[in-house]
Amino acid sequence: MGIAAAGGLLACPHCGGDLELGSATARCARGHSFDIARQGYLNLLAGPQPGNADTAAMVAARGRVLGSGAFDRVLGLVAHHSGPARRVLEVGAGTGDYLRRSLGDNPDARGLAVDVSVPAARMAARADGRIASVVADVWSGLPVRDHCVDTVLCVFAPRNLVEFARVLVPAGRLLVLTPNPGHLAVLRERYGLLSIHPDKQERLLAAASEFFDLRTTSRIRTRVELTPALAADVIGMGPNAFHDPELPGAPVADHLDATLRVFEPVSGTPGIPDPPAALRD
Ligand SMILES: C[S@@+](CC[C@H](N)C(=O)[O-])C[C@H]1O[C@@H](n2cnc3c(N)ncnc32)[C@H](O)[C@@H]1O
Ligand SMILES: [Zn+2]
Image 1 (tube, rainbow, N blue to C red):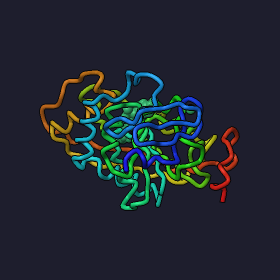
Image 2 (image 1 turned 45 degrees about the vertical axis):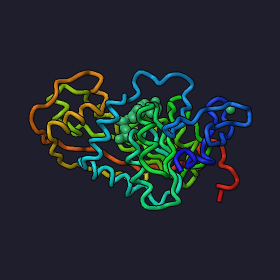
Image 3 (image 1 turned 120 degrees about the horizontal axis):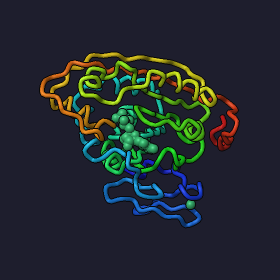
Image 4 (image 1 turned 180 degrees about the horizontal axis):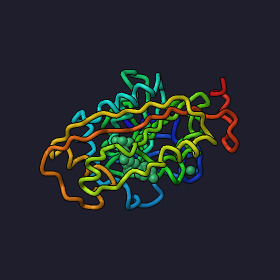
């Protein structure tokens, strides 16, 4: 199915009109048109991808780390809380693994993976036939129609809360997974990697309260044993990859430490348009 999985969900990044999918292009009623790449993803970026988009090497490293099983408990936690969702949007989707797991085994579920990185979009397009993969910058507004997805996932990724509130159905849910200061702390300290701001969680809650009510909070803290190759991939898959750290020569015992928060949209949020009539009851 591929990009067709986004049928009825996409909006034109230029005019906001509905984007209809053909076999080779996506087009709005005003004639704005976008080619569907041979690899199955749709690039809706206005220009070239920004310099901080994940590179092909970072995405490949992330794929190996998630494929190793080291993050399975985190993947399982996100999937468990995404509920019986039918339309799931993941922002900063990377490889598409979290999205795929969240669709469960429901053949009617549809996933929309959005990432600013072309290599990530390529990989997410291959993750599952039920996933449509789109290149877009979450800070330029999501190319997604108002109130059309049940669940938004934001896992270690940038949060545009206004946009998340706009695209969710009124009874939808937003899942945000953020790292705690103990997350991969051994690797961070030993290899001089970027640290996690201790106020990160508080800042999220303060910013979200305007648009969302917090429903549940689940913290996961689990030990991981990383071979030198896997530890190098964990370093290589993150923003640290831009800083060229010295790589590990021996296995590393570390912890994953992250918090998942489930939010629901506040009803009648100012500035958020009313949902289409079909979604009101
Ligand atoms: C730390 S990775 C997380 C990927 C995936 N959620 C996971 O946990 O495996 C962050 C992802 O967000 C993407 N990203 C960064 N800035 C973005 C933006 N402005 N809009 C959309 N995606 C962005 C990156 O390309 C990268 O794939
Ligand atoms: Zn248009």
